[in-house]
Image 1 (cartoon, rainbow, N blue to C red):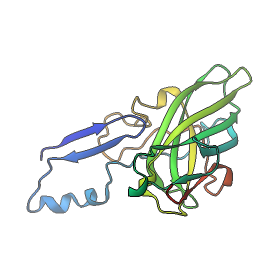
Image 2: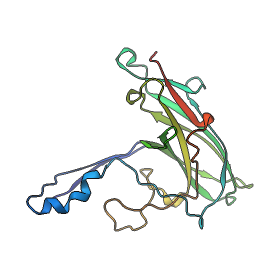
Image 3: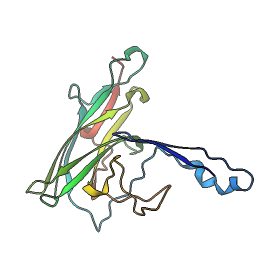
Image 4: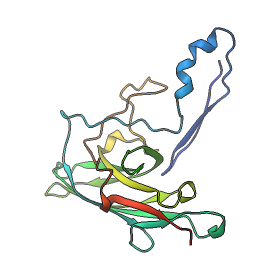
Length: 204
């Protein structure tokens, strides 16, 4: 079996696997592979033994005008995008002077399903243990339909636990596929919060 891994990294990371071929009985052994999505970023839940801090507030708005609505992007308004959400959050309870990486993921409102879009940035906790978060998140509104809602959900990691491509480090460095990832110290999980929600409106 030949495996070629092609990755493009940045605020949105997309990976694909190519060059696989198997015949005969080997196909049965690859059954686990069928439900694997190479663009999906595995995220671990917070470990209570290593948890730190809390989110005191999370506000997500259209970066252009400050409201909670972003227009869908269809053929009638091509050239108007791209669209971004502004994510402002206050978090407290961290080690003063310690460095953390805040990773923000777009998720479907209610279910919390991963939209496959994320951004990240490193912060240093203030002397009173706070993080003042202000980030822009690219919103691929051409994938959305009018009335659909998403939440921009932040998670806080120790700075060294996030790779250069914005993905959490693997627990086992030798793991290749479907690898367990290092857990965040804090995660925002209120996927019905109106303050953290963006609604897709009609195209402009």
